[in-house]
Amino acid sequence: MSLHAEIGVQLGSFDLEVEITVAPGEVVALLGPNGAGKTSVLRTVAGLLPLDRGRITLEGPVTAAGPAEVLDDPVADVFVPPERRPIGVVFQDYLLFAHLTALENVAFGLRARGVARDEARRRAHQWLERVGLGDRAGQRPATLSGGQAQRVALARALATDPRVLLLDEPLAALDARTRGEVRRDLRRHLAGFDGMRLVITHDPVDAYMLADRVVIIEEGRVVQTGSLEQVTAHPRSRYVADLVGTNLVTGHIEHGVITTGAGAEVVTTATDHPAGAAHATIAPGAIALHRRPPEGSPRNQWRCRVRDIDRHADRVRVVLDAPLPLVAEITPAALAALDLHPGDEVWAAVKATEVATYPA
Image 1 (cartoon, helix red, strand yellow):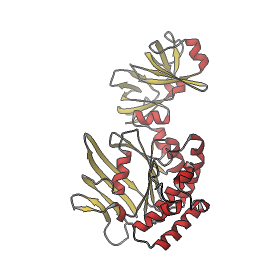
Image 2 (cartoon, helix red, strand yellow):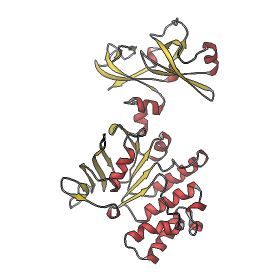
Image 3 (cartoon, one colour):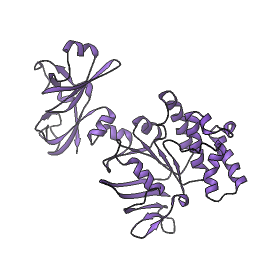
Image 4 (tube, one colour):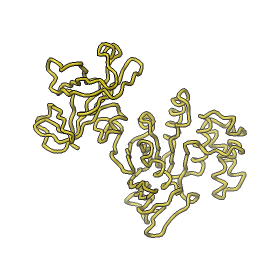
């Protein structure tokens, strides 16, 4: 059984057009900047936001008999309400009922599906035991830590025996000290669920720790998909490049030289790269900064203006403007020696061997 969602939704001036498939046993992380449409994707799959166009189905293996289970299809006038979908949801702020105990919160989803009270409480207690909170069954949400509240929300979602589990920024409500421990717990609990799992996040660490595959969306569109290692090696948008901490250059390559839309040129060693659209990545640490035109062997030299300087621990990230927007990473000692400030002009130099290219 796999989840296949072709999602088309118009939200005011924002148009969401996304296609996602999650295979049995797979954990997919949906990554993107704020406002990209991540939570809207989750809401359509959960049935909290109906489609304007497209189709959401649960499909069996090719050898299985019978048609796919359609959850939403506006053309066929099919819409399965949230409470009838085999889907569990863990919301960003958990949405636990403050007046109910942990046990009653977990039992709520079962009761909403018609399970008798005693049976619902029995199953709820089993799930609290599974997530290590059997001794907290009688406590209310206000007395639980952030990590405990998250586990109660996860138990509530799993207690209904869903085929799809949706998690919306499951670690966002936690402080930095708690986050690592809860992330490890969540990974263990997700591994014990053999259905389809879709995790919404903006944190690449969450994606790396929890997911088998990532889907990147920006402005309501999928821009890249693959393992985090594949996405890291070959980012295809500036957001993805920023996410993985590298510089992305896009342009036309010919005879080993990439020319950007703004007319900047980047010399590479890929002289056998076929002519056409191409991407290139440049690690921030590979960029040397100079107050005057550099001497020596760098084949790439650009006169830029410093837009911003970001100091972090023992490294300094210098944001450069046109003709080639880049981020260089230098030491605090180098910053002091160069005496750089926002607005200053500087020369950026990169060896051709430090430029990695791949087709656009």
